Image (cartoon, rainbow, N blue to C red):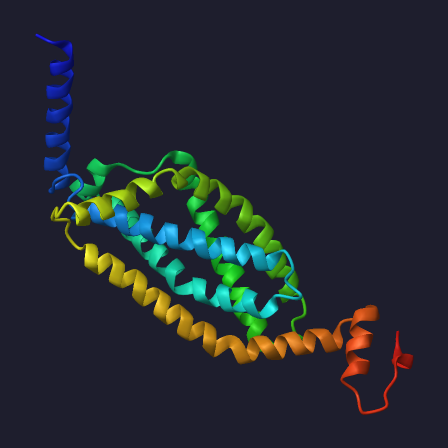
Length: 246
């Protein structure tokens, strides 16, 4: 017998056995496969939005309004990501056969997950709080926001780099299923969830724009140094000069 045939039969048998344990066919969009697809699609969306947010961080003083807008926009997709991964976590540790068969993430990522979740909550929570209270009363909250960002970007980079290679495969599976007329369950629901998260995020971001503008104006008025003094002089009464420099 051709050894390649033996390997093919063995692989096929393993696939059938794993599908039976999961309670659905691999790649059909049900159960654990659907959960993995939603997590991957949300991760792809977050990757794009986080890249855009990263650009604003390079010059956050001049791009403060876009920084706030994208930051608030990120919140609903992040909640979807936390929800999908949290659902898998609960089902796995409650010993659901399908999720037990799918297996857990690697141990290093399981150890990093609580740290990443905590830093995410601190980072975005402090950011929203900063915008809400204004630039004149932020106290040490700005330091917390900056420090949590530095720690968050390190932990998030490890997480993203590990899963980045899987995202094209998940996207390709969704697209190929549609182009070939293959029945993949809940595809529309997954994209609806992502679209809904984006709509809610955009609505929240626009709601925060007035606060972002106020924070930006307050920042320029209160900042020290030559640039701040020039801005104050320029926004003063007619005839004001730059003699008020500090």
